Image 1 (cartoon, one colour):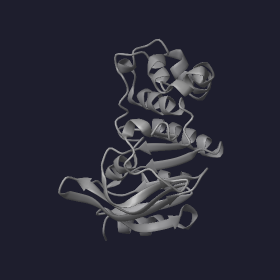
Image 2: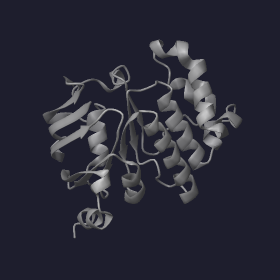
Image 3: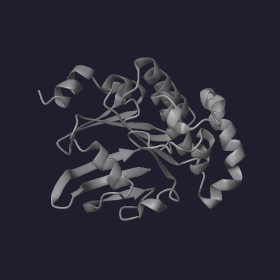
Length: 233
């Protein structure tokens, strides 16, 4: 469904990704792990059109999407849950969610998708009229994820969802991701919590120094070997 072929990308004269090739199958969860500075966020930015691709290509259902303006990626069915949540703090929870269905073709479905979001995250239903800036970190992450789902995306891209969250909240979050995967969502997950990321994934890629150093079915991954590569041992 989503494929990167020999992609190079970076910032001006500084190249970060070196000939990265990935395949993210439909209705599967693909996780990308790696240490800080490995190029994970740059990879997602290249996918979303925030960073130019200098070499290689990015394909969605066989059609090239590299070079597509970021604001048009939603029309292609790609939604992102960014690192750090990036919710609109002065707006209410419900206003944040409605923004996820801002595109004209999604507006007729707002009511039903709000109902689905509140069913998935009952806490958000309780806080629907509350300013998003007053939420806890876990609740804010729920808003960011529910907002992305409001567009009923074909591909859900999630960047470091567990960052800064308490372990019990992380466990709840991964339960939701498991449910979305079971529903047939196509998910690309960037995560530093390797054990939980591998446990939920179908396929695992490890980035190190802007290169793919491991590509393996999740069921075949041995964490001790993964961590040895992760830390460059």
